[in-house]
Amino acid sequence: MEMYNQKFGEARTRQIIPQMAQVGQSVGINFSYGGNVGNTFDSHRLIWYARKVGGSEAQDKIVESVFKAYFEEEKCLSDVAVLQDCAREAGLDATNLLSDSAMGEVETRAEQREFGRSCRGVPKFIFNGNYAVGGAQESDTLLEIFKGIADE
Image 1 (cartoon, rainbow, N blue to C red):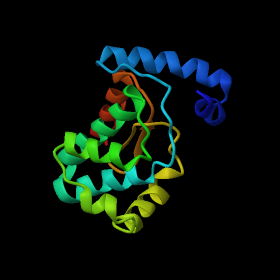
Image 2 (tube, one colour; image 1 turned 90 degrees about the vertical axis):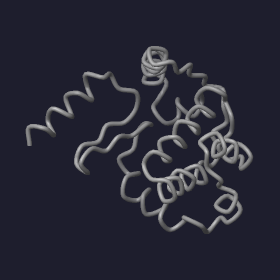
Image 3 (tube, rainbow, N blue to C red; image 1 turned 90 degrees about the horizontal axis):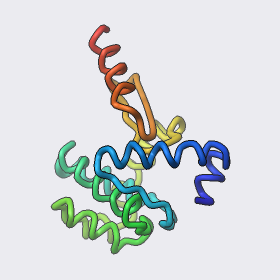
Image 4 (spheres, one colour; image 1 turned 120 degrees about the horizontal axis):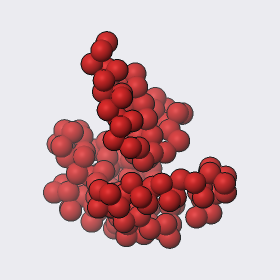
């Protein structure tokens, strides 16, 4: 919880944790907040790699697996073994990627520069390259964005 307090402040953390828990439970996610964050760069490389080798579908599977490992199972995303398990769960062999720290580094850092400045919560959705929303959101919020895009 300390990381959330540092990032958002104690008052905001007390507000968002129950909201995340409520939204999560409504879709079958049981958030748990005792995990060690550590350095998540390799998890970002893994997400990049999944899209490169398997497209959006593979990337979605990796994101689901990584989020489950951290947000529900309290696993440490800086642990290569955890990321290997996430990759296997998503049907991806990431041995080469996770044994070569340079693989995907340039691309992942470029993505972080492009999208990371405004990222204040995960997941972060970017629609049509123009609309972004981060964190647990109600379905009505996403519907408003889709309607706005459709009206353009």
